[in-house]
Amino acid sequence: MSKFSMMASLISIILVLLNFWLPHTAPDTEKLSPYECGFDPLGSARLPYSMRFFLVAILFLLFDLGIALLLPVTWSMQLPNPIMTITWASVVIILLTLGFIYEWIQGGLEWAE
Image (cartoon, rainbow, N blue to C red; front, side, top):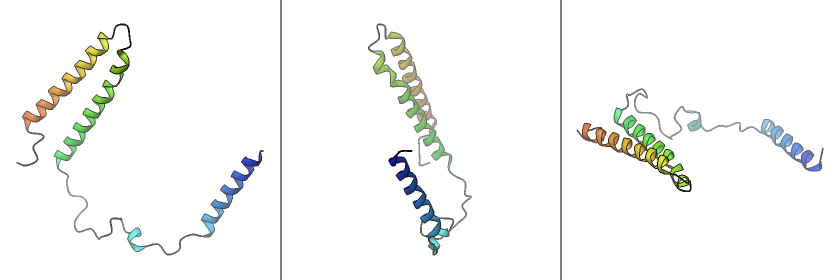
């Protein structure tokens, strides 16, 4: 075993033992509460969420995934025949645009009723 490995092991063991021997014995009451935000909860934590928040999250994930799917297009330009990759990238962009237009027409992006 080299000197470096022995020293790293020794320091690790010392730190672990210090962690067990010197615990923080007076934890803060705010840290012991179920909510670490600094104030007492005022209502029930089981209130239903609005579906609009989930819709926006799903739309964000879809468009983020669409961007990830379009990343290889830049590398495909170096291929001898990049037409197939550009075609599939165009299909992805068209599907995302049609989905966005559909959500817009259905009123899924409206926050106020």
